[in-house]
Length: 254
Image 1 (cartoon, helix red, strand yellow):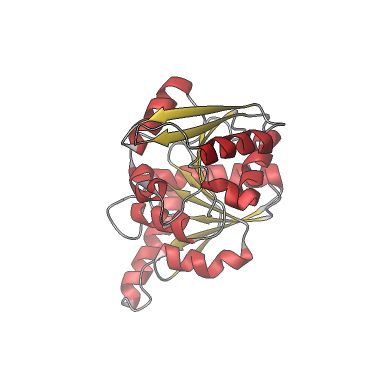
Image 2: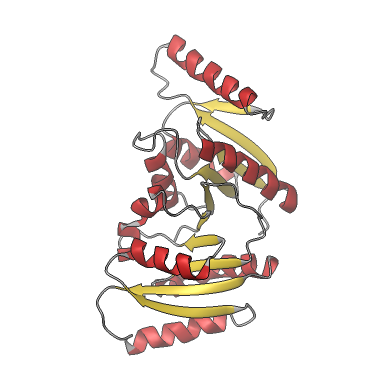
């Protein structure tokens, strides 16, 4: 990846701390600069409430021995990131916030990957190694329509000499159509110079299917290309906040 500016959006959560660690490690490896932001809520809040939020964040960073500067912003994180996206090439966030039922935290991660047209890393636990050696990519074949997204995955796999798993989860029990068979072949062609394998799994529950593959194959990174109108996208928010899936998630907006 050739990104040079990284935006790390954080709250006061363990996931956010892990996201900061990952953002700094990734930035160092790729010679990027990192800006850390924290939303203090709506700008219409009383000044004392905003000042308290800022003070609590400063204390949280200090308690965790993080000396990096934090930029305080107003508004929902998704809106803020959307405004700032033109200045950055990559977003890093915690997958679950201090209160993931709050619109400023967990659900915010789902909003970001659904609406922000930048690559996004969602971090839950601290990855043992940022060189992901086994990458799981969930595909519904529509990804071929925008091959530049597949090139991003290909570059990531080649950079890390990764094993790439292409997983298609079907819920209707049917065999692949002639068009889908053709698209599988196209995927193989696109990733021909990457160590890769194609997997087909029948499951009515996409999340259950993902978990099944993870349990068997133990990947180190989950890659998604979310869209708003497909079966994959309809369950994406659930995948993000699911505590049983603790892999880093790399999202490339379609």
